Image 1: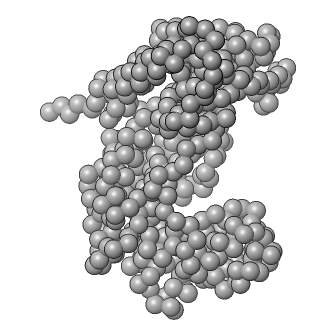
Image 2 (image 1 turned 180 degrees about the horizontal axis):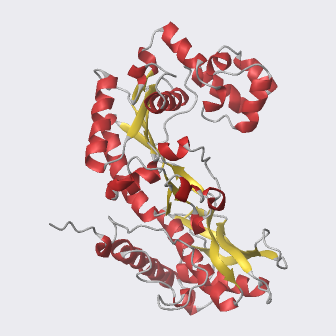
Image 3 (image 1 turned 120 degrees about the vertical axis):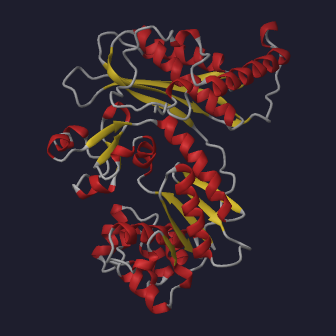
Length: 436
């Protein structure tokens, strides 16, 4: 048995914790550079705002419908997510954090009424963090994900599903007839792992609801589509095919890319940007105990502008696998100098760490110079550990590479976030003050 705990409209809900005036008002959170909507309140959804809708297409609703748009505040969302996940873990003995707002909970060995227990956990999360959530329970992860959709839909759109399934839905306690009616009321595209293309193919083939898919023969699905879809059908039929991943495997590649808030033309500004990106990528590598063998850096102009176009990338091999920020930044800077071409308005750049391997694997070779001995490598590892500790304690960017520029420097490449709220829970200067 599995449960899926999912925060409702998570980014918007995080914003509403400290701005209760947003309750009941249509609100959206915008992507990097305030480009498009990546989270919507129920009121915003009622206005017909789709996920990913460009801001310039919906901004007229700010005057006509009172729509409030906010820049993404990922520091706040990440901290609230940590608090929510620690409370969700109390539902069962094992947990897989699937995304910033979703968590699978293994319910093996849990006794008693799971629905009652889930309601208590949900109430605790709401009281202690201010985040409303839905909880779905099923025999497999796919069924738990589907149950979560039913729980949230029954709360938001009463009448589609029975009211007792709102907030918490346990598919395993439904009778065969109730379960069939619920599956018949759910479109096949709502199943976890079925995208738009596959959904259209299934619908065109007469498989329009979840019940239609459950009734299909798994082998027929495999011949007509894929083994992946066959696994999904078996999961819907109650046969476990996807286990709980308590410790996700390390990433095989680590990327840090950003679109610029304004066009960048100078090499010095690009160097600051890629230094920042390389530093973050190196920090991520150390966090998962990995070393990079190659570094890729790219720059490109915007295809949406009528300016002259330019796009180049280069892979720079590292002498030995490393997660040292200095070595990675140096390789990135050399690569940037090789591909930079003057006279273009660059809109995006990025750094990717390739050929990752565990830091427990040591590359043996002769010391070619005194400045790169094994003792020096160990000393640099301690330096990077100290760097990460300081930045974790006092905030990202407290210590950084000089080529990233000083805080007072002109940073034309910084993202455009004109509507960003304070980092209420992660920055001392942003802590809200209650006045009498």
